[in-house]
Image (cartoon, rainbow, N blue to C red; front, side, top):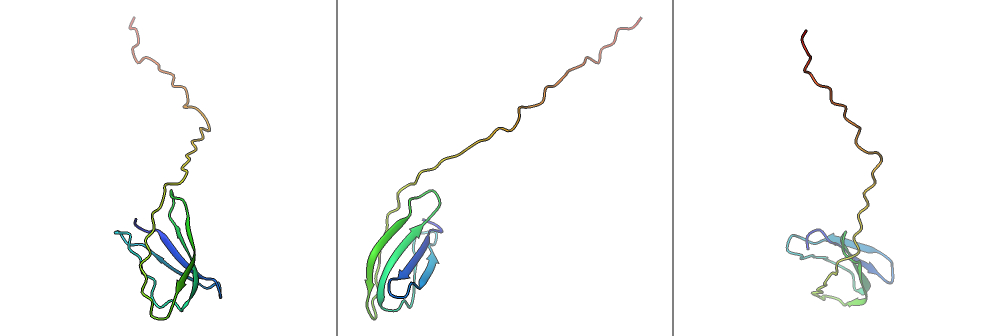
Length: 96
């Protein structure tokens, strides 16, 4: 999924590390300090995903996959005024 926002938030410091997914849905967060993290994924039109208690140790290289579900989509169309009336006049004139 292209351009989903990924955030890893440290439980101990509340520091936020962010990235976005590429056109294949891959993402990469490098050099995260060892800690307990909360992972959040957001993309308009989809439900926000949160994974609690993701533990990273020294030299961990973790692959965490997510599956996003469609969210509620609503569209509102507001009509301010109707189309103006058109008055047609004939260009034909009777000659005398």
